[in-house]
Length: 379
Image (cartoon, rainbow, N blue to C red):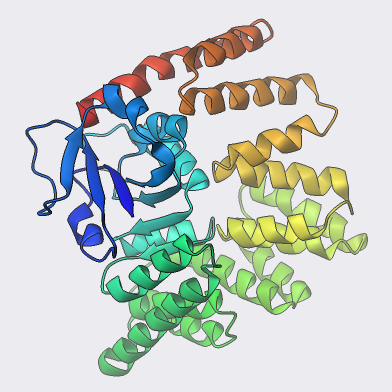
């Protein structure tokens, strides 16, 4: 198997490369004078020569989101997105945008940060934590190449993390963070005992006077009940934390849906409130044509938030659009063209949309900014 590596200083790509089997050729896309992996089959390639590769023979390992336009342009066999934390010298808005878009196109997502791992797990499938799980990740990669489902490996890692934190809990006793993380993995596994450990975490935080825990923990309690199917209880818990105008509006919608017995919409909105966008999207997609307009509107919001812009555009193209949504569709279309390295198409799309809203022209700046970021990363 051949690998094309778009590296980043924040991710230890050698740690990943060392567990890959059947390595034939490894190509690093970056400056020639930088150190790569300790492998005789390793060589370097500048961005300008990417088009010369037979890209369908390569799996791209992408640790920098700024490589996205070059990766998608060459259409490699597979894409493994390796997500490091955003460093202090990065523009966090651009970093998060292109990281989100990269993960939406990836066949597999790997990170060494448990915080990032959990955030991404609540947004999409096929997310893995590399730290202390090299053998598991190796197995998942082999399954990916065999075109097998990765779900068994995802679930196995949740089980492994659950056992790790259960053991830590038994050793350390009640601790707010350990209990919260244990509850998180139990929740992902659909285990009702998540509520017990979340309760332990909440009690510890109250005792230590962490005043911000009411909102986060009660939203989590609400999502646990929603996943268990007790939506009436989930709504009652959610209502306790509905304080802002946006939250109160959400609560009004939930009351209306409850009267109409639209339980799928309620469940999806409660998942969204707990940042579980993956579960929210699944509920809405499973609803199919039922409540199509409201469900589609909510799906669109979740797609946009999780940078599933290709899905968002497909959804927008299937509906009669308001002026606002028509502009949104064109901005998304232009950005998708941009990340596929189709700059001229993107420029025309943004200019066309700017006739109705001149603010769209700010997207033109991103064309130059993304190219400069890529050159700074790989030249």
